[in-house]
Every structure is written in C-alpha cells, then in structure tokens.
Image (cartoon, rainbow, N blue to C red):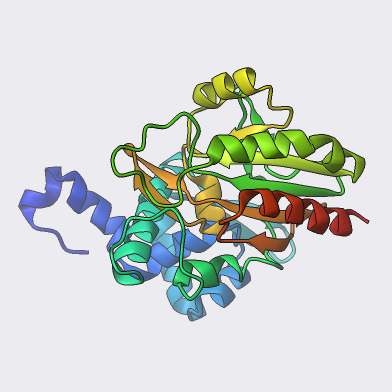
Length: 287
C-alpha cells in the first residue's frame, strides 16, 4: 500500500497497512476462529489460492502471523497469530460490534438481540462449530484454563456482561441479571456434576474483578476472563459497549468433549428457564 510521507509516524496509517485490506481482515478473522491451515482458510473465505498465498505472505511479513510447520511430506504450514496478531483481536471485535450495531442494526445500544437479527442468526449457526484447540482464558487465579473442561463429558459455557457493574442511567436493556445468573448456576451445580457436566462462565471483566465476586458469592465453577477478546473473536460472540468496555451479550453454549458446540441458547430473556434448559441439553449431550 502506498503511503504519504506524512503517514510515516501515524499509527492509524500504519495499522491501515494491515487492516485496510478487505482480505487481510477476513484472513485474520478466520485464523482467530481456529482455521489455521491453508485449505480451511481458502474454504472459509472463498478466496483463490493465489490471492490467499499473497495475503498470508503479507501478514507474515507484517509480523502478525507466524508460519508453523505441521507436516514434512509434503511440507505444509499452519498460520498462527503472533503477539502482535493477538493484540489485533480487540480491534476485530470492535469492528464486529460496530458493524452489528450500525450496519446490521438500527444503532440501538442493547445487551440483547432481535430474533430476526444478524447476531441471532450468527449464534444459532454455531452448533457444529469446533472451538480452537488451544483456546484458554485466564481464571480467577490468573492462570490460563481451557474453555472446555478436559474431564467432563460436556461443558456449559455461559457468557455474561459483568457483575458488580454500574451501568449508568438508563441501564443498557438486557444487561441486568448477571449476579442472578451466576447464583442460579451455583444452585444447580450439584445437578450438573451428577450429570457429568461442567460449567464455566466468561465475561470481559479482569480476573481480579471476577475473583472478588467468586469469593463473595462462593461460585464453585471457573469464571474466565475474556478481557483480550480471544473467545469473542473465536466464536464471534455478540457484544455491546458499556461502562467503558466491550462486554459479552448473555448466551449459553453446550459443548461436547470434542470441543464442538452442540446447542446455543440466545437471546436469553428468562434466565431461570435458560439454566434449566442448559442442564437438560448438556445432560443429554453427556449421555
């Protein structure tokens, strides 16, 4: 990309070299979703092999992707995000949030969604999707934990906006009830365990924020921090902006032991019913 001399010290212009290309953005989107091999990328984007090869070369040269050998005969590589590439995930999620609200929606700030909306369609297309193999998020102790339990026959993963948040006036529609949701999962925890099902909650709050809530509320299951938006980018989780941060909209996923999404509950209006339904679906999945 040709740049004006005045752009040489402009961070926006430098970032546009990487993100200003339509195909580059979609390649990064797919790699964040775990599609790290050439054929999977070509199929996911619908891009010719020549153009994809050229774009991958650019992204490697820019330092946001790294080629990793996974087969010697014939030689084949997969493409993974470098630290610089991982640092682009908040930008990708912010682009998604803006597009969902202003291009695919009517501009309304809401923590829920319409059943005929793009977010609803995207979430309900998740069943059959496999999570990236190495997807881990920081837990309340600060150490990374897998999003899907390695021991359980099924995992219920619920995302929520955040606990202990001052939403302001008026509150964002649909953002209320995060503490109630955690409490209801806490109360049903023995039933989930008897069914061989694990439960994990995720928000974009920081680990220490979640740790204090987990201590006060005696939450028995892991709370994971998606503050760097790895989960949001991997599953294209719907978000909204409130209290100075992009936050997950409330949804529940039932994921099997092979890390494949089996069911998606979204939007969630009746939290109590959603918790009971997730137990029923996950127990069936675990059998």
